[in-house]
Length: 389
Image (cartoon, rainbow, N blue to C red; front, top):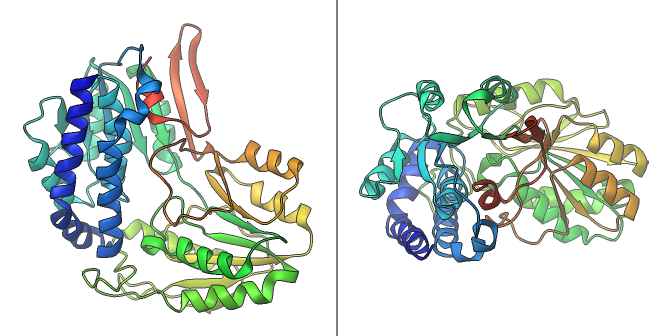
């Protein structure tokens, strides 16, 4: 264990030393602003250098062997830390591939870690070929994959190749509930910043907010004031909040949401090539259950608390929900039954890397081989705990 901790600390130090190169690569590959890129690398390095905090999850347990993974394009180094860091702590080897959208990031990480023989990083194959390759390797017993629900279905059909599959699925439209008892000024600013963080290109960014009508006017004042402070432009400009939306699928999902969610466009609402301004839509209609990435926020005032809770939880994608204000015990239970992560009165703009992470329903699951067959479960997981048996 001591050797693995020293290795993980060294990997964290290497990420820290490569910070500027990685930040520039994020900007070049997918338009991540330098202020966000710096935060991502800092969180990556800090997490890897403090893996001793995860020892209780792996101590006395056995590794799977080799853990295979295809990392998403958003927060790629942070997902490397969360997934590969946990796998290495559990005394596994790692074979992974980066998203095709971040080739420069991949090359930097490959060169940075090429002397570590227990980490294999795919440079030659596309990710479809890499996933097929992983299915043929008897040493790869655990596989991590993220993506849309069709990706989840595909790998569920391939379960016999692995002892465990971890699927990080789509987050849908992560909601926020704003209830009496909340600090409306703080929440208005927070929702704007959290919704548009990295151009809304994290699976945990807020996409719809339900606001009790008595709070609506004040909330909208603070929300729109902060939205208007969001700066879009050259991602290498340290004052810019997000740059171009380079992922084509993100632009497609954004356009679909514009067409499907009916309401008054208060800000933005258009695409200009790879550029999408912060977009806020006010609606009184039921918000459809969509997959969405990008700088989009739907706002819906409500009279009936019961109906708002019902709509919030009527989703296939029980990934994360944010709640501000007073919540009754029964309401808490309802939310926690439907979402993998429920964040009450959140203060930090970024979610911490350490701690339970994951969704329910189509937002994610773990498929694990047991004596009685394969068992499927959902909900937030501790990655280190999942990497051992």
